[in-house]
Image (cartoon, rainbow, N blue to C red):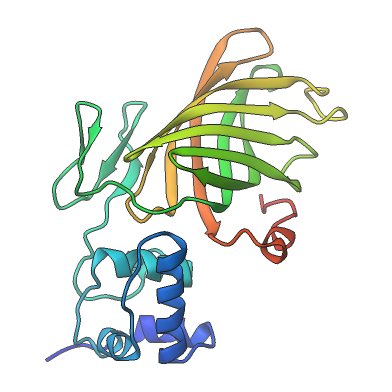
Length: 256
């Protein structure tokens, strides 16, 4: 006897979408990220009735994009084989919970988990840093960043009014290779803020989850006393659309 997926049904209804409209949104999401799918009203019905216990990978990614909810929280009765980037407890990050184990070996991402598609969109950038001048307290920097992908290059720039703390524009210059993103960052701090307009820059390396909705890793850069520091950095996809209306909606400070 199958168990209906009432969670997925509730999420869909919360979006005010019919089953047919939901399927269309899933197809459009797949097209936007370069991973087409054949979602249909009948498929949505089978998910919600419990006739299909878990979606395939391409559908899982589209479901996360459309609902904004992690696939494991959408009520499917069988586990969906999706790897996640997690802190490994030793100062680094690993891709975990994949059916094939940690999918990165000798610096060469496995073809089974290589992210596909275009990573252009609006992303929430979050990093942590320790301020030596403020009793070594940990602070968080947040920006809404627009990433644009050209081949294997990703360029990013924060929206004008989308910094958590005052006006501190952030730019990213990245290269993607399978599950790995490597590049540089630059942040111009606010002239009336604690760092008085100082310009900071450094390197960054992250792993991309196969859903393409999250990147996580570490930054490295110098501090006020010209010591080299590091800390966690995460990018989380908010919207794959880069139209003016979407950019306007995110042109505001993120929540603390």
